[in-house]
Image (cartoon, rainbow, N blue to C red; front, side, top):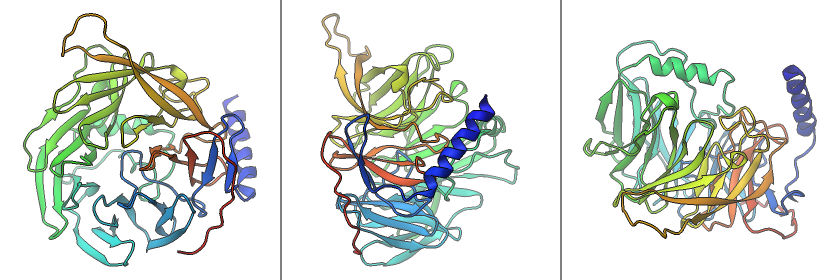
Length: 416
């Protein structure tokens, strides 16, 4: 039966790839306008928690097999800004730059002027994952010594143009975590390329992400099987202030895929109590320690969640029955409106503040192969949710309007 399903899926994707994908359409199941932003087969937006939006709030950076491009999502105006084999890290928050790895070194390119700088070479066996809010520092991890890496997890889908997750990913994660290799977290100065190690250990450090507001605050995780690790941590860029953000309280409780609120005050994450049974989107306010947990149903659980810049909306990319939630009807792009449950009882600041996420379906993803994670994000104006999909065979970048209705305009894509 599994072989038949896989064959059917392959045939469907092949047939879909043989036709030109539509530029715009109204999803018949949701009534929302969907727009294909990219024309290049194999194009992809960034991982869900990496910044892909330039400071003007109107353009998105994305990868193609030929390099890095930028697109205006309202007009579909697009152009290539970096060519060659590269790994895109992030878009700058202060300057109109893209930061990327090429030929073993960190570079940036100004997408408006074309100015390009080589920042500096990476340390041995290292990668860079994030750029801070004022674009003065990059941060990454390295494996120290010469120990062999057993079946190391590949880069996050869409980095180094590795788009689809391998089928044996769970085994790869278990073996890499169990190896207990010596690792370091380091920063690199953007102006000089100077490298400084700020943290060492035998945990598997991953998912580094600078605060969008505080240039000195870095979020990272202890990677591995989620039920075996204390995942979510903070550290200052000078190596001080190491802090664990979530404490497990039951067997098989899992938490991860952490991301920042736009103001840098809250860290949000997927929480399951226990794994695969009860689902929450949880948040902790860094200044006060206040915790908010929003409940959602099994079918509404998503591989990744994200939040609008004003904090009023969340979105999710759903999942297929093979994901941890085992959702029978989870293949959707979702919009969530958070709703707090009023407290009519005991006031205690140490209590978790409960709530629910009210879900609305935006895009039917039944034809999407979830080995490619959609990785949702809101545009800065919160009018669109951006995601990547292989629903037409190759991967492309799409956007769906948050408000329903409207008519496809099939906008022409002029040269910038």
